[in-house]
Amino acid sequence: MPIAIGQKLESDFRNPLGLLSDCHRRIERFLDGLIAISEEAQGNKLSDVQRQQFEVGLRYFREAAPKHTLDEEESLFPRLRLHKDGESLTAFALLDGLHADHTEAEIKHQRVDDLGRAWLADEQLSPDNARIFISLLKELRAIYEKHIAVEDNELFPLAGRILDRTELEAIAREMAVRRGLVVGMSTSQ
Image (tube, rainbow, N blue to C red; front, side):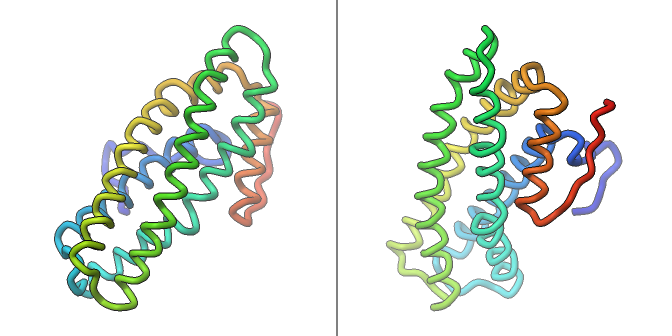
């Protein structure tokens, strides 16, 4: 995606909470793209452009999005649970609901991936499966709208206040490792 004047630059590993939020924008874009293509094609053969965008969207949710969930479930959430001060209790109240969202989304994503791959392999979906596919995508969008709002507006700002620089750097390193990257961090900031 080209950079536009005035566009917010994406975060880097010096700001892992910003990276998590940036990933939310990608989730929204890829999900909206899959919905738009699916509603337009209605299970019929995809054009070359639609097919390419559709494949990229499915691959994103199959390969990249699960890393984002692990970033939260294995790196962020456990560190928040280690804190026992008053503000941490607010985070605890959010974490169980967010975990449940992850579980529900994972199940729906598997069904979307199965149907999406079948569509690509057979070059069409039955009308019933096309309706199910679109319905699943819209259910995912509803889950993500609520989930992302809680994380971006409540959890990440709270985590920024609760977690210290060392904890944030550890989260960033774990995120990088999940992506096959090595990131040097400085504790001087």
